[in-house]
Length: 158
Image 1 (cartoon, helix red, strand yellow):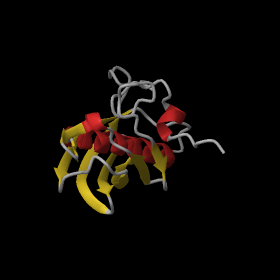
Image 2 (image 1 turned 60 degrees about the vertical axis):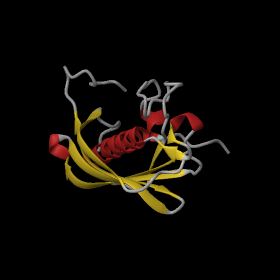
Image 3 (image 1 turned 120 degrees about the vertical axis):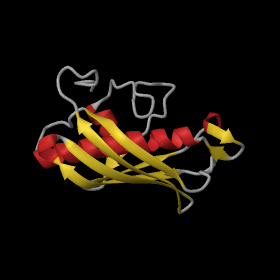
């Protein structure tokens, strides 16, 4: 049985984003999978070069994981809500990360995101997300993600 394709691999196989681009060999290459029209999950394992200090994941990497996974959750939701064939190109308008406790470097991380507010007609979604390690939440995020229009540098980036 083959490994299922993530949202990124399905809709943006040429994307080179540091956090979620399948084509960025030096990036994090997160893989988001839908759980519903409003929620996605990602499982990701840090590498030794992602450390902040021995045994602990860098906080900026935590932010990138939450940002990219939340963005794809918003794009997935907007696609499902509007009945589009592909997700719109969305960008982060704002996001707020809270680092609750050290995120261990030697554990599989579970990143969960879900849409808490939505304005599909305006191409906007507010997403809340968490990083869990060993059953404990280590970081949280709340962000607003918007679909961009022609003329924006991210328009049709996937």
